Amino acid sequence: MPASKLSRALIAETALDMLDNGEGLTSLSMRKLGSELGVEAMSLYHYVESKADLLEAVLTLVLGRIELPEVDPQNWEDALRAGCQSFHDVLESSRAALELIAGQPPASPESLAVSYFGVSAFVSFGLSTSQATHALHTALAFVLGHCAFKGGSMAGLDEDSIIDRSLITDPEMLAYIDSTQNTTRQEQFDQGMDVIIAGLRVQYGLS
Image (cartoon, rainbow, N blue to C red; front, side):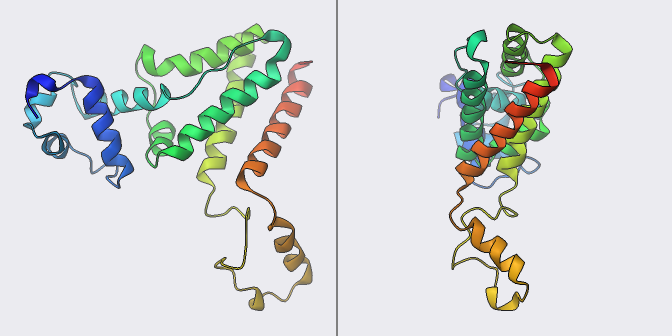
């Protein structure tokens, strides 16, 4: 690829593709990225200052995929559900998104835009800035936790599960396993959002 075709956006997209295809954050390098793009690594430094700046560009790209909802102070619950669902979908669509968002603190106005939008939305619902910050943190932590907790989730447990039912002698444990068979991860997510919203109503008097 000619160096003249490079851009910060293209570099970020290529880096995200590499991360999604198994390149870990720690092993991703400017040399490997340059090779993938067909240019010398030094050419990348015209668009990203360092690896930290590269990850910031990728983080901004991922966060930009979140569809921010319409904010109606009279219908804050739907806005929160829609925003969290979009955040959830972005995390589920990219192998690297969860690691990036959980481990890469935002360092630019662009990557701060989503959290600032969320805090501003909660303020419009009647919360103080401090309350809004805590409320947003709680909601986002739930989404991150739900997406990270795949290996331990019992949702959708079926005959192909690695759990050997013949080894379980406790009937109550078997009943618990049976009760999860018709539960999907989306249903778990929706029920978790119910709990978050109920808690916000009680904690902050939201109606």
